[in-house]
Each structure stands twice: as structure tokens, then as C-alpha cells.
Length: 224
Image (cartoon, rainbow, N blue to C red):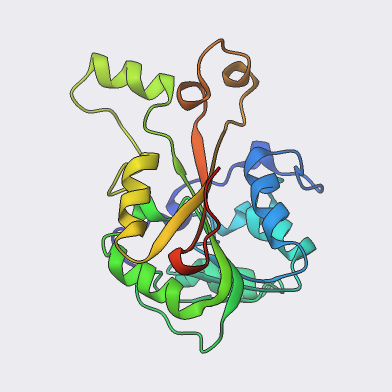
């Protein structure tokens, strides 16, 4: 395992274990709406500790329930083998350099891009595996989330996931994809926590995550 991967060193989120899928969760709703009945590639799907396959919030399990076909990739080989033994179609591959020899309608990159070093490699691989009318679904932590702003104001550095290499805001994510002939055609924000959703703050401040639907520029519809 790469020294940069946390893997099973991070304890499983046992408090989230459940037989059911949290279909109302903002992330699951975002992916399922686009993936239903389509051929889907799920990048970085192990979610650190592979025991998290029991979580009601595991995106890959939700996708398996709605996609026409589903393939997952992850760099954490031990986690991949664990999940393959439980019937999931997941292979070991680097999100920045992979070739599966097929194309997909939907590529899911849920909380992946902030872990990467080689963004061009990632986008080039997505381009190779995406059908002309396909979409890339990106979720990433919202750097303007109110708790992060407070922490940044109080200390020069605050602890984040040790695998992370980058913070994206909607503008920098858009500019990165624009450089590679893609565009963000839809943005939304979400948080799993009721305390956040009830705050009288703008959505760009009160939510932990933002989601983007990305299309090749040549086929992207005009923004409203």
C-alpha cells in the first residue's frame, strides 16, 4: 500500500452501519439521479476502510442498486480485494493513470480530486473512458464551509484528511476543467448535518460539500 494511503488504518464508521441505504442523503441523491439505468464507473470507491461497505452512506452500494452496469476502481489494493470477495466489481487502479478498455455514460468521482497530484492525468483518463454524451460527477469538500472559515481564522493550519493535497472552490474546479475542454454545467451544495441545513447562512457557507456535473465543452448545454 502506498505510504500516502490511509486505508484500514482509519477506523470504520461503525455508527453509520445499517442494512438500508440512506437514499435521502445529499451525495447519494446527486449520484443516483444521474446514474440510474446507465453504465457507470466509480473512481476511488473503497472509502478508506473497506468495512465501510456496511455504511448506509457508501456511494458504491447505492450505485450498484440503480446503475445498468457498474465498475469501481481504487488504489487501495487490500480494500479492493476485500470488496471483490464480497461480490463487488472493483479493480485496483490509479485514478491518475488507468485504462479499462471501455467507455461509460457516467464517471463518479466522489471526494476524489482533493486526494490527487496529477490532475491532467486524471482528466485525460476520464476523457478516454467517457462517452461523447457522458458526464463526470464530482464532489469535493466546500472550502467556504462555515466551520472551516472559523478554524482558518483561529489558527495558521487546521487538521484535514492527511491524504488531501488540494482545496477546490467552484471557480478553481471550473477553471481546471475548462483547460481540458470540459465545463461545469450544474453546481449544488449539501450537508449531511441538520445543524448546517438549518443555519440562516448562504448555501455556499453552510454546506460541507459541493457537487458538480461536468460535460465535454463541445456537447455542454448553455447555462441558464
